[in-house]
Amino acid sequence: ADVKKIAVIAGDGIGPEVVAEAEKVLKRTEELFGYQFETEHALFGGIAIDEKGTPLPEETLKVCQSADAVLLGAVGGPKWDNNSKELRPETGLLGIRKALGLFSNIRPAFIFDCLKEASTLKPEVLEGTDLIVVRELTGGIYFGEKFRRETANGQEAVDTCAYNVNEIERIARQAFEIARTRRKKLASVDKANVLETSRLWREVVIRVSADYPDVELEHVLVDNCAMQLLRRPSSFDVIVTENMFGDILSDEAAMLTGSIGMLASASLGEGSFGLYEPVHGSAPDIAGQGISNPIATILSVALMFRLTFGYHEAADSIERAVAEVLDAGHRTGDIAVDKSKAIGTIAMGQLIVDAMRK
Ligand code: NAD
Ligand code: IPM
Ligand code: MN
Image (spheres, protein in one colour):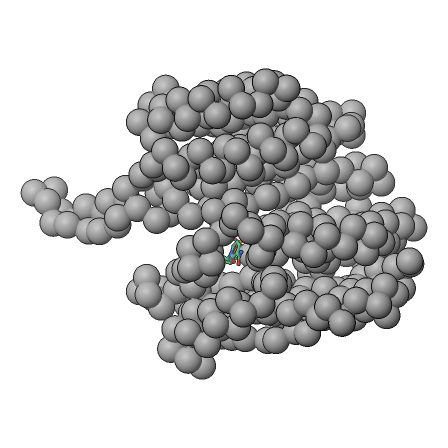
């Protein structure tokens, strides 16, 4: 049989809690659809620093490289916040994305109708919101040279932002391809009025757009985009942008869906291999309480089925189950209007597993 290998790296904080629920969904998919998954767990992030002295142990990278896909929870926490760069969980996250060649981060934000009242925005503004942020993931200021130096005015810190034509072109093509399968609208977000990297970004995107005459392209400055996302979210279809802008705009987009606990993501390279993780972090403020929302991670499994395995029916089954459970009024605290009726992580995971059908 065709056994799919999935590396599971749960990480820190609520990572292990939400990943445990996603693993139940994997198990249920095997029962319902007859697929076979072989999961292998590996240490990653803060816990790997504690146990192995590095956030991304060689062994963990090997487990990921020999897998068909990676399921990741989240990393980080106050315990490691004052560590040097090499001993930070976040450095492991950047390292794994780079080492696996995952330059494209896909973050869909769509509104489940019944969650309109969970958002801080007015329901009529949210109506019809269904967008995807395509975030460049292995370049820009995250990966540019960083250093400190002494100056006449004391210490100075420097982060450099660089993008080459190839890096821009490949993410632009991915975004155009995705737009082509949707409403055929692409917003390229930059800061071309100020940044040289953005001016090159815009030039390359315009050149690539010649191959996609069926896709309507608009250029939006990032500050304006941050505003338009709250003013007219439903008018966006696909947004393509550089690493740091994408990080910030996707957390903003999360609030359109009601909570960051709802937003899934896929990180892809050139092939079908992918790393799947919620957009949110390790949420140290609620870790260990069993109240985190597992839906972002569960929906990340649905993305894995679609984008890496081509298991579309199983993905449909997960997404339908989530919608059904939400429609029935079940809510974790982050999406509950009446917080006193909120259910926990495990209860939410179980309801979704039970609602899955072939
Ligand atoms: P965060 O996303 O962890 O939390 C932001 C807020 O959202 C918190 O109030 C948290 O309780 C809430 N939240 C997040 N996920 C939730 C969920 N599933 N259910 C309910 N509520 C949820 O962001 P932060 O607080 O800025 O960062 C905390 C740590 O996580 C930091 O160390 C940061 O570096 C790390 N981080 C990791 C990742 C990742 O691993 N991909 C992503 C973002 C942040
Ligand atoms: C994310 C996170 C990471 C990022 C951090 C933890 C390095 O915020 O996955 O969005 O900025 O990429
Ligand atoms: Mn982020």
